Length: 291
Ligand code: PAF
Image (tube, rainbow, N blue to C red):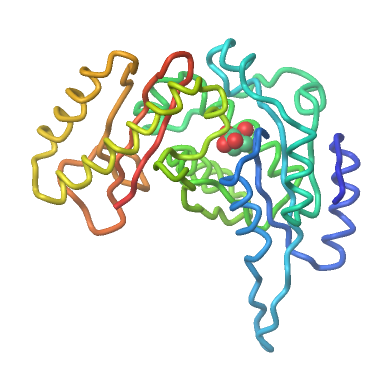
């Protein structure tokens, strides 16, 4: 596995790969890798290009980036606490069959502070956009920089950050990046908790309680499937968390899974998303279900 910390080295290497005609698949991460990330690497590694004519298949080169991007943290404590486990991450990536890793410093990614601002329209006014002002600007800036450096043919993002997937798709559409965005399923622990780098910041007690988010999402899904009105479903979720003072519910939304805008009625199968965010102690947790 090749490991690069500068854009120049990475570009030089990827130029030779591209000259040999190999497609590039990219998994951007902030490190502190878990099985969810490894499932993205697996998706990238095994996603073949079906070439025309003789129907040959070409394996792509899998590139992963590890960079805790300061511009997407609207809370300095959250940035300081974010887990950094580079050595362990590299070992996991090597074992997972990743071909190349880009792990730059902040100075390498931001030799001068980025002044450009990206506004994602109505995605800024709901959920993560509303609760984390400036977050998607930071995501947009760093993903655009990484796409320019890596020039991937496909990039893989987890459904756990469903609104981020919509933001990245909008970035790609509006700025004409020639990259296909692939959304991969959320991986869960045995008790349903969505895998997240932040889970390792939970105390043992909090870890036990954290499964409430998934429990509430599945309960809300069955209420809606049983034709409980949306307002009553929202009220049931709010009441559930009102009885759990260790949580501070930020939002529970019923939205279109692609546009992330709130919906008034259940839509075609696979297009309605239930999304939740709550603070548990010092850790902010998010989760969603698409049904
Ligand atoms: O999802 C993440 O880990 C980050 O938001 C990303 C896409 C790597 C950008 O920093």
